[in-house]
Length: 164
Image (cartoon, rainbow, N blue to C red; front, side, top):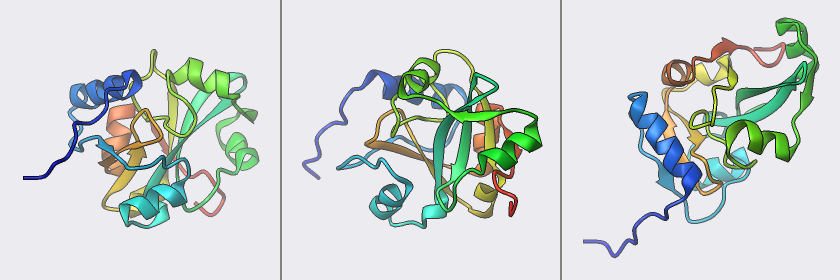
């Protein structure tokens, strides 16, 4: 038997855990020993490829907070994506991220927000059998799949770069 301590209680993580359960998601939230504020750090902690990390990025699409879940293997091409969806895309401030998601940058989850947030999901994540996303805190992640992310977020699958 291990001497593991119980997972900390954090309000944003509790909301994410409840939203995942309500949506019938299969993965369990995992607390990491240290903050994984970048895709590279998260991948290193989990022993997986950086492309398997679903970065949760909040942008403003014509001023409306919008979540883009993108593979950690590349960056969102905001000019290109804006042309595809017919919106001007700018980066949200940390205050706008917190207001829209109830979570802070570095730990934004795909679910568990105070109100629904329009979501786009990078089709590059579909290349992996398993992807990992933040769970409301920079030290929390959960495993999922591309199809499950689409289902639990009601998100729109879309390439986020011209290369797809």
